[in-house]
Length: 137
Length: 129
Image 1 (cartoon, helix red, strand yellow):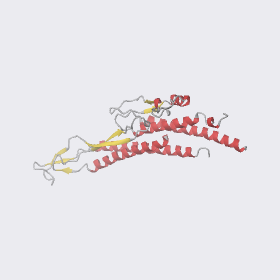
Image 2: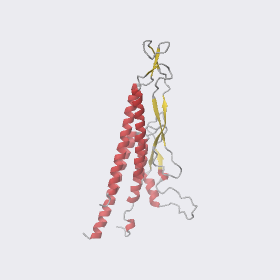
Image 3: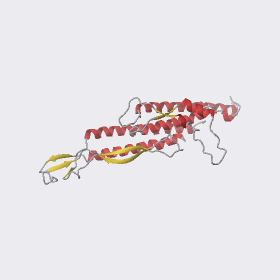
Image 4: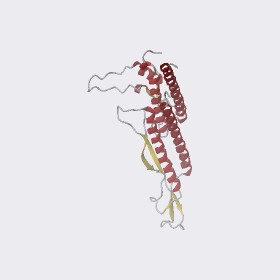
């Protein structure tokens, strides 16, 4: 039944966008985290989306979204000379995250728009299904 | 009015199934608006409806025959030609897909109206009102 599968697809899209919003939230929350070592500094996280490919012979028209991985950004972390800081290393350096606030804001808006379009698709399909159920009444 | 009740709905029964299938494809496209390397797909509706009407499906006359899963227009699924290419290989244009989805929803409702008209006509004939 075609229209019921739309709920699977739109639902998987919404959950994938929620993961993306979650990573944006944790990146922004940890943007100011300070570490005494380069390895300990927070690195921005990004989800990796992929299409769920179904077995041959199945119904190929509905392809749900899955989050295959959450990867850390490879951008260099910020190094600041601040000997007065309690976390500073022996040379007086502190390391802050490589989170780019502008990128994160753009990412957040893109994720919320995609989430909204999935909600609209699910709502329209629901209306169509209800009208189909009323057929002949 | 056709003589057999089986044929009463005519093309609309198949059209409704294909509209639902097309909605499913476009919903997948919209859900994958941010997936790298995803290619947007759509249904060649006229071709799919012709296929569904001509009923050229092969019959499985033996238990070990492989049934051909073409009944619901699988061969008519085509990839959309992107108007703007993107670096991540994704060919989904959200605006275009949204417009196509609403168009498909309205056409689905149109088919429902046709079916409703046929059913109410038949009910009137049965009741003799």
